[in-house]
Image 1 (cartoon, helix red, strand yellow):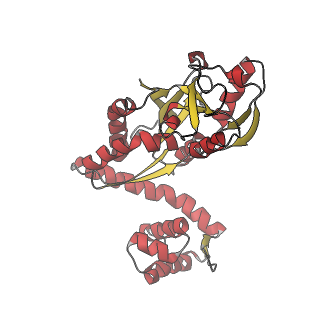
Image 2 (tube, rainbow, N blue to C red):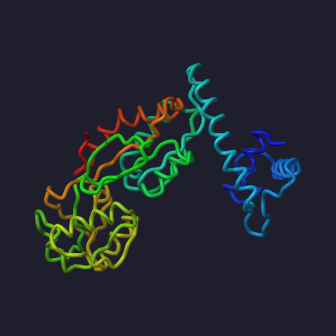
Image 3 (cartoon, rainbow, N blue to C red):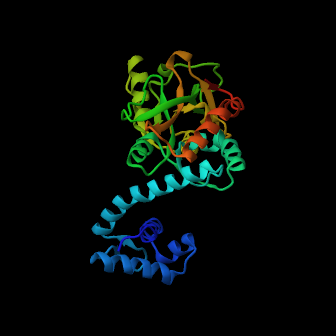
Length: 309
């Protein structure tokens, strides 16, 4: 027989890859978790988990059940959150994906304010680019996402996704400290036409670099790609090449890297809040979104090159 408790146990086993870790998360014994899965399998007459020495994984039947069950569990969690909200108590878990630069700079104070206001709520924070977070939002495995795009390379999400602009960032070229153009007040993309480039993995980062360089009549020679700006800066410092850097990525700047401002006509990076355009959002999502919007401007003003809207 399928029950909510057994579905949640299956979900935690799938997330953690072991009965022991799932038991710790759920506050049960390992034996109790094993019994829940066994009862689920017996009731359905199929094997749901593949028991391997190092890690447990779901069988095709287990994946199908969890895919259908996730929606049920999420609906129950949202219903519980909304009922508690009527009584003035907001609790449960909110699942947020964000780009790493915003997570390290803008979001800490905002999340702290949210936790102060709603101490019974839990936040699951994941680092993801829009290529990952927007499909996850559509699939229901995220409640909201902080994403980025560029004024010259905008996102084109599903019509159900609502994008709210939070702030904009100036763009820079990251160069090694000993680079001939490191002391310039401002540079153009074409100044680096013959340089090796370190690019980003995200589709709209690639699209932006391609569009900016094509308007200047050259094709960038990309020698390395990474979504981690710390890694990108390390490669710049080692003389591997130059890279586009948004303002938030320059806050923790490598000591051997200089961020030279680009001319303003190249546009800006935009930080946006992505949510599903649905008639009724869970109370927890509404609460987090409201605090994010209310406090974003004051958080953004702490960082040069970041422009609240």
